[in-house]
Structures are given as C-alpha cells and as structure tokens.
Length: 414
Image 1 (cartoon, rainbow, N blue to C red):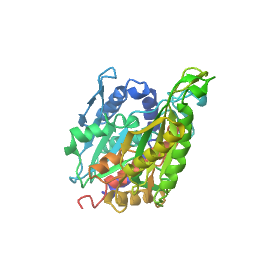
Image 2 (image 1 turned 90 degrees about the horizontal axis):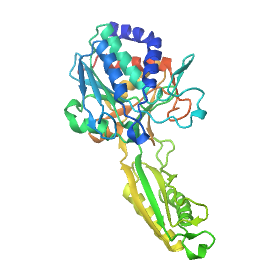
Image 3 (image 1 turned 180 degrees about the vertical axis):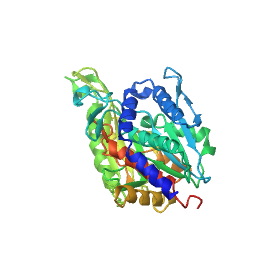
C-alpha cells in the first residue's frame, strides 16, 4: 500500500494540464438551477459520466429528482463507486450547480470561458464547486490508470441544487438511497476551506431567515397624514432588529469566526412603483446565523416582540415569519475523518490544520443530521460567488493527493 500511495501521489502531481481541460469543459456548461434562471445540471453530469466511463468506472448510479421547471424534467444526482480492500468507504461530495455570474462588466473576461494566468484559472464555478469535482475525477482516473485497489472504497457523489437548498440534490439522495451511507464510512465535503488548507470545518451555525412584513395604509406622498407609511415603519424595524437581536443574544463561541451569532438585514422587496406614492406595504428579510447554543425559537420570539413595539409606535401591523430554517450541525473534532484529514493535510500541504466552525452552510449539515460525521475541507481562495472567481491548478492536484492519502490508509479496517 505504501508503494501504491507514493505512485498515486506522483501521478496526481503531474495532472495539471488535465485540471485545465476539465475545468474548461465544466465551466462552459452553464449549470444554473431553475431558481437562478437556468436549465439545470444535466449537461454537466453527462460530461462527468462520460469521463468516468472512459477511465473504466463501471459502478455508476443516478438518483434523479423530478423537477418540471427544467427542460428534461429532472435534476441529476450521480453516484460513482470504486471498490476497495475494506468494506468502509471514503465519500467525497461535489455539487454541479453554480450561481449566476452577476454583472458581466465586473469580470475581466467571459465568466463562462476559463481564463488561465499561470497557476490560476478564472471563471464561474471554478472554485465553487468545480475544484472539488476535478479533484474527485483526477483521483478516480489515476486509480484506474494505475490499476490500484485502494484500502478504502471510494464513493463520489455529484449533486444538484446545492446553491438553492439541496432539496433536489443531496437531501433527495439521502431520502431515496440511504442504504449507500454507513456510520463507519468517512465523509468529506470539499466546499469550504482556506488558502493554506489549514482549516477543517466541523461545525456550522444554524440558519434562520426571517421575513418581516409591515402593513400600513397607502396614500399620495403629498398627504402623508392620510396614510401610514409601511416603508418608514419597516426601516425603523430594520434598525430595531439589528440592534435588539445582537443585544439579546451576545453569546460567543471561539470555534467560529465571527465568534457570535449574526443578524443581517439583507433582501428588500419592491414596494410601490412610483416616487409619489406613500407605501402601504413593505417587506424585508433578516439573515440570522446562530451559534449552536442559541435557540431559533428564542430568536423568532424576540423578533416578534420587537415587531410588536414597532407596530405600536407607527400604528401599523408587523408580522415576522420564517422564510427558511436549518439547525446548527457539528461533527466531533476527534472523529476518524477529522484525524485522517489532519494527517493527510500535514503530509501533502505541510501545515497542521485545526478544526473550526463557519457561518455558511454546506451539505455536511444534511449528513450530520443523519448521524454521519462529515468534515468540510479544501484548499481554496474563498472567491466563490464573486466576479473573477478563481481556483488554483496546483491545489486541485494536491487536494486529490490528500484524498488519496486517506483512501490508502493502512488502518482502513479499523
């Protein structure tokens, strides 16, 4: 196994041009979900299937989710498996959907065509989450090219719909094919990390998105005394929520950065179509990211208490409803997958990673809720969702080496 690992690592180190080839083809597939105005991920999954088939991977399974909003009526979820010497499996998860590029003028080049500058590749999706997909493909190709049977089995999951909640992606897979995943398997989601590769995400804050609706009375803006300005009352509510929620929930946890819960007024719906109309209805949203020790129910109750006071001040009605909620999740910092990652990252990147928590959300939360202790790790620049998103060619190869190191563990039967 030791010699096989050395050969795998050497082979993966030479796959830089293959990274460019794969990234270029993946980026050209505009894999936008219907929530983002796109046609879905099917073209991208077909390409991935072709590449896996070409390198000799035969155990391929689709667990598609019906979705009438896309032309083919389905959201594809592809599962590929390569056998190992042990019954345990190392599972890697990459999502195939991307977010829209935003303002094209903010990009230095076409976001749907990969631009190369030395070690860097620029384009929509190259980091989120194609670096993971490419590393997964490199590993499968190299195992087949060298005809190596790893210590652990390798499971690769290419998921749809991560950018819009995963209902048609991993959540669907876990519901329809739970028998695939066992508690003693290892689970890695390469969808968050740091430029040095020195962070292993083991916990995520809870998500609570609040929808705040203010209802007053519309009138002509020149006679404001005849109406009740919902926008004005809503603006007051924005500040009251921001200040009141931070004051009510000041707890800190050093595992996370920032170490506190956050309460961010974000989206604001359009109200009236003309400047000379005093709005009688107004809607805004608050993105709350909650430490595990902060109750979602307590935050909702506090927001409604603040709303009641604001409604009385402005003589309007203010409702607070839950737009989206996801509980906090965590894996033990000393779980086998975290310990295996620590050893592999130290060998490949020469840094000793530490466990952290994040405020963002990954599909690891779905796995953890099923009792599967997933870790999130990658060596990335954190440019996802930005103009000029970029990914490192070298990091794609090295991430694959990290996964190879874990895959070839001598204690795979433990």
